[in-house]
Length: 203
Image (cartoon, rainbow, N blue to C red; front, side):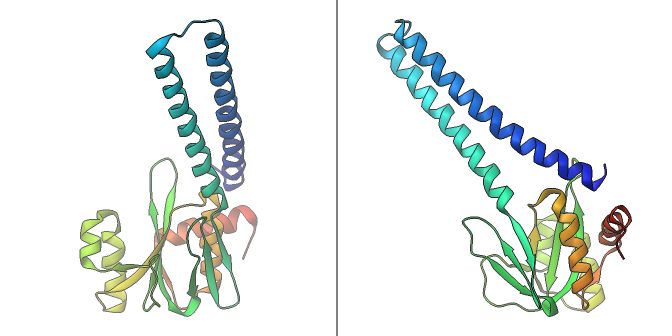
């Protein structure tokens, strides 16, 4: 699927999900109130109906809140660093010069993660020690670890994994390619970057 179509589809899906969630919440509340007013619920049954209603309404609110959090995720490219912004989390600043390796981890349903490896870091809860043990525990990153350790002859890196952002990750990846001159980009990452370049006539 074209990147432009993916972006449009994601925006449409977000609006549709919020609209139908609110519609269902209102409809369920209205239905229960009408039936209760007509005396359909009595005693313990009435208590259970309202308890279930509150639980379902709360789950809808949590679902919409999660959608909102995901929609606010962004990666901003500054003069010498990237700033990763995620709602309810401390922003992460990564200097371009610290980034040494970028890979794409292909997922199901045409989605992917961006793996960013650093050779050094300041203390941050958002950056993970990326070593052999981590790769063995998370098999999807094992190939990336082997390739990076072979290129740089070292056993430990630090990493940040961009999972959110939907189709915007294509542009994050392209901007990383244009700004991180020290970094090695894997063949898989280059394949995704070429999609951006070709579709948007970039160079």
